[in-house]
Image (cartoon, rainbow, N blue to C red):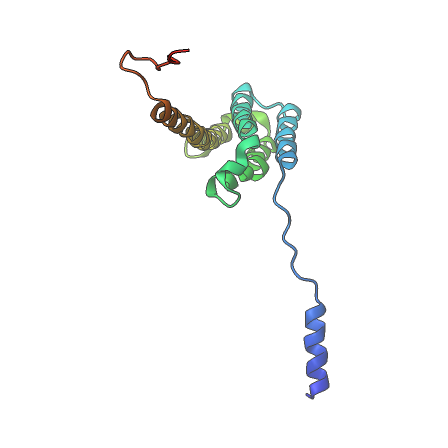
Length: 171
C-alpha cells in the first residue's frame, strides 16, 4: 500500500455523507401527532374511558406548547412532553386499537388485566406525568409573580395604616 492509495482512501472517507440529525419536532409536528391520535380513536371506535383520558393528556400538552421552551430545550421535562405527544401516546393507542374490541376489553392478557385495563394504566401514568410537568411550569410563573409582589412591597412599602402612603405633600 503506497502513499497514493492511502491518500485516496482518506479522501473517499471524507466524502462520505455525515450522519444528519433530524430536526426536533416543532409545535406543528406535536399538534399533528395529537390530531393523528384523535383520528385513530375515532376510526378505531375506542371506548369513552380511553377517549376521555387521551383528551385529558392532549389538552395538557396543548396548554404547555406555547411555553415549552421555558422548560429548556434539552431538559428531561421538555423531552417527556414531546415524546409523549409524538411517540408514547400514539404507540399505546395504536397497540390497543390493533386488537379486536371485544377481545381486548374482556380477555385477560397479563394476569387478570385486559388490554383495556393495561392501556388505561398507561394513559393514567402519562396523564399524571404531564400534570406534574404542567404544574412545575406554572409554579415557575407563580413564583415570579410572588417575587414581583415582594419587590413592589419592598420598593414602595406600606404605611402603618395598612395601605400605601399616597399623600403628595403641600401644593
